[in-house]
Image 1 (cartoon, rainbow over the protein chains, first blue to last red):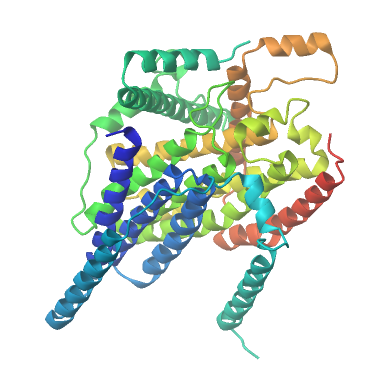
Image 2 (cartoon, chains in turn green, orange):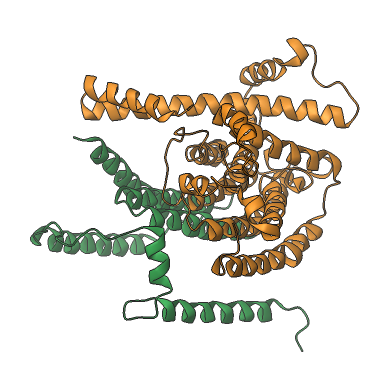
Length: 169
Length: 358
């Protein structure tokens, strides 16, 4: 048992435990906080794979951005003593059957497949190469997708301003 | 001279020769954690002392002066008092979240401390993405504040948390863009390389006017991000009693208090590293004699001296400006700082392309 292995098991154990807690908690803000822990533990896994940039992006976008947004909307809409209703018996049963079936199916597929260690050279995750790749207009460059996404975001921004506008003319 | 790298190398080699790799790694982690915690606690306590003294000077008072010489042990006495105080449990609060909130806030700031270069070779972890890491970690702190406000089940706390959340999210943008200006100049996000790029002059001098604008914007936005006055709407004493930590007592309150001061230290330390040359000494043109004398002062003193200067500026803001209203606060960010910042970034990109900086 080496150090990194122990940390890996701690992180992946945390992901499993907190993701189960986040869907089974009846208080909605607690569920959001458990989701935050799952996302932070995943950032830790990325960091262990030496994808430092991806780990930081995971933290800044998911933990710092999306979870804060979720918490904000919970703060505005719900009260502290409001709990989610318990699911009906029938729903619970059908959900459990679906989940167990899904787990068994994917477990069988994973166990039958023989994994081989990757033979590709390790990818360069330096900031500079990521930046160059993002601005590359060549075959494997991301300049076009980047610009298309930014136009989509701009459209979403304009749309949300229009919806939130008070005196529509 | 004054390089800490040999010391740290000798400790690492001692651990590696006397223990198995697993125990050596574990011991190194524990030692590092203890040192960082010690720095954290001592710095936090003396920042509180400095704030009280500076505030007192600005209000023409004496400040703490009874416990120890010049009141130097006052904050230690305060800490003992806070440790011994009763922890209040609220019946109608969400106790799990109520207890976990101070820890989220304090863990975020301790993690940020880890990547700050205190001196030559005196940096716990030198990440490739240093600046981005600090931004990512400091964005976690606000979650602690938000759930502290909500879990307390008190209207003052919720209003304080909402204000604080809105403030931190919007000012994070300005902090990030101001730091991006220096990243554009230096061409890297790694703290050690940013410092190395300032060997022939600090970015605030080398970067012409845009670097100074970025520094000013960073200071304003950084002060707002730590929820300090004049941006302390989150805990506006006169209207919200104490905002998000109204219901907290004892050591849990102390955690929020300490984290606020340490966040101020982190903001100041990042400003020092990016704009003021980190632990590099002050050099003037080619004056060999003057530069030699400056080199004689250890880098750790340079780092803490510059950081103390930036912290003094932030305390000066707090005790001289009146508090902003929430609409003024958001207007300042979205209508003034953000456009200035974007124009500044375009200007800096142009300067970097033309190689006009020194």
